[in-house]
Picture 1 (spheres, rainbow, N blue to C red):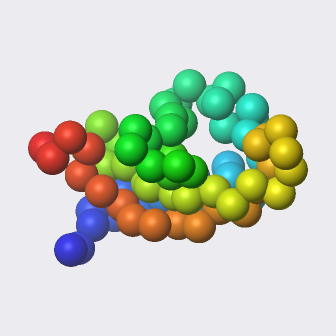
Picture 2: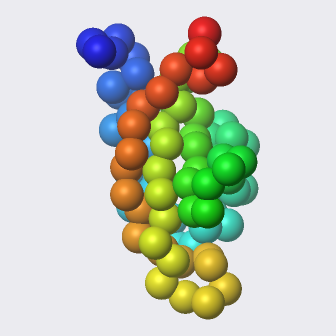
Length: 82
């Protein structure tokens, strides 16, 4: 699947936001990301790249409070199949 350049730019910007976050709360506070846990998965989350595309990640938690973790980037998906 070839992605539009704007989606690639948003992906790179989102990766920078993940890298600069101190805790998971930094991502939740950023309303533009629409960072949310995906239903049906233990530790999978998604973040908005554009209205149509989402970045899906899994988090391997480092602390018991589940506020700090290592992100595994899974896929860029078409949101709600549109």
